[in-house]
Amino acid sequence: HVDGPRICGMPLKYVSLVTLAVQNAALSIVMHYSRVSTPPALSYSPASAVLLNELLKGSISFVIALSRVREVAEIPWHRKSVWGIICSLPYPWTKPFWSLCSEIFSPDCWKLSIPAILYVVQNSLQFVAISNLPVASFQVTYQMKILTTAAFSVVLLRKKLSSTKWLSLFFLAIGVGIVQIQTSSRHTAPPKHTTVGSAHDFHVHVMSPMKGFGAVTAACFTSGLAGVYFEMVLKNSRADLWVRNVQLSLFSLIPALLPVIYGTKPTNSQGFFLDMFRNFGLWAWATVAIQVFGGLVTAVVIKYSDNILKGFATSLSIVLSFLASVALFDFRITPSFIIGASTVLSATWMYNQPPGKEPIISISTGQS
Ligand code: C5P
Image (tube, rainbow, N blue to C red):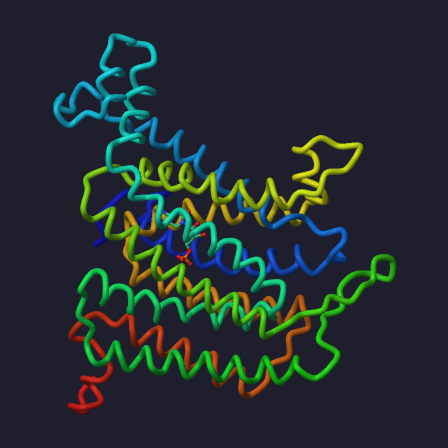
């Protein structure tokens, strides 16, 4: 029996997890293709994509939050912000809107500024990583965020990890190391490129695995820190998840906007907004749409499921994107990739075992 809401009779909890796995795999593939399929001079601006992602995610979260709004009148006056008190004035037709605004601009909204900045950095690093690594290697190495999330949980949330969990984190690092070594060695010898396109638009995309691994490692740190910080803010308050999502997007706007303003090269013929979205083709829009969808599904997974199951969804997505890479990008299966990826998957499975069902117990006692 599974509690919680259902979609077409199926628990939302599992629907959202499977959706997240497919979304994760689709994002890596579509994002990779969107970056490598055009020559650098004709590719879109990742900074604009990050900004657009936050604008769309924030707007959708706002609409969802508006449908779930609590009337401001229900909040005692001493807990209202100045905005909340102003909103208490009799504006019956706009009350839900102002009520939501008072929740969004609550006195503790600044707390979201930290994960917001970190997520903007992470989303930007993701573009660097995916442009310089094969999809499957990116996915496997990105599993290191389980390690950083655990480390930040221990330090910031004072969580205690069992020896099985530490052991699985150790295996995770080993598995990522194996994939990293084989990917680097395969790409350090020239030519470092993937060839993309038909006879008409053939070009060579140069990849730099070291740059890619550097970016993905940094993204793992921001993911861990932002995730743990977001968890801390959520658990220490009663605010609605969607309100928190709007706050997250609002605080993301400044760090997301700055690189767009400074990085957009003006042309004579087009205005700033057209320059911003120069070369934004179908694949760029698809990348942004999948990212937005992913952000919203992540929020649903956190609400109706938990981070443990989220880890499972991510590791399932490795298998999906690995199979798709073989079919789409001529990714070659090497024994070391299989050993590394299997170690990462086993470590993820081991880490996610509930207490009492951990494999180390069955190994040490000889029972399953
Ligand atoms: O891989 P990880 O779980 O760290 O990825 C988090 C992604 O989900 C980021 O792109 C972030 O912008 C997004 N997110 C979100 N809303 C949340 C939490 C994360 O959009 N509440």
